[in-house]
Image (tube, rainbow, N blue to C red):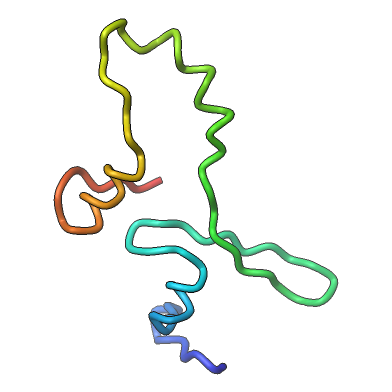
Length: 83
C-alpha cells in the first residue's frame, strides 16, 4: 500500500487501515524504529498506571468510563485532549 506525503509532511491513511488498527480521531500512533525499518502501532492507555491516582479522586465520585468519553469525543461532544 502506498500513501502520499503532503507538503506539510502529513499522511492520510485509508479508513480500513485505521479501522483494522482500532484507532480513530484523537488517538495516537506510536512510530518505533527497528532494525527492519519502522513499526507503526496504536498507542494504548496503560490502565495499570491509572490506579496510582485512585487516592486523588473524591469519595462518591462516579466511575469514569474512558470508552464512553472517547465515543462522545469522536462524535463531536466533550473536550478534545491533545498531548
